[in-house]
Amino acid sequence: MRLSICYYGHPGLRVKAKPVEAITPEIVKMVEDMLETMVSLDNAIGFAGPQLGIPYRIFVIREEKFLPDNKYYFGEPEVIINPVLTSPSEEKETVLEGCMSLPGLHVEVTRPKKIHVRYQNLKGEFIEEDLDDFRARMFMHENDHLNGVLTIDRMDPKERKNVEPALRAMKQKYNP
Image (cartoon, rainbow, N blue to C red):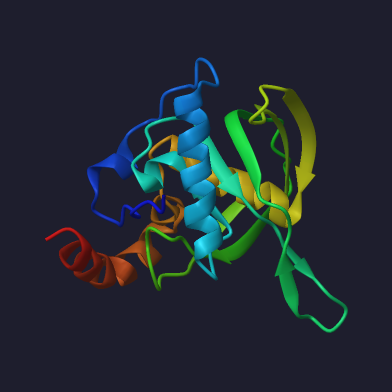
């Protein structure tokens, strides 16, 4: 079942998600719905549980893969449960980030270039990876959602003032 997206102003976006204690049939169904929602949208590369009204530490992603002619396709969808991010690199990178919960808004976000992650997949298996570049950024972005943090919270405060009118309009449009 396709889920509704929670947009800026929805209180669920600011709540810290709960750990998944066990991968039950209910959790599997939630993940299937998250995946269906992501895949149904042409421009979605990931969703965290809170963005779809699911209060658990789960996110789904699909990496953009580029062909030699610069066209892209999506990699296989992945399920990340109870992620723990550690060992952020000293080296940082600033990149424009978009967010499905902040439609039309792209803001500069500075994040570590590399990170180490440990998480579970839908089978309950533990996976550890050293991530860099865009994959690392995807994990950090979605993990922020699990902690009630949005890209706008990571902006330069002066730049944040510049997007306040757009945020007010978004809040009014999606959460009247």
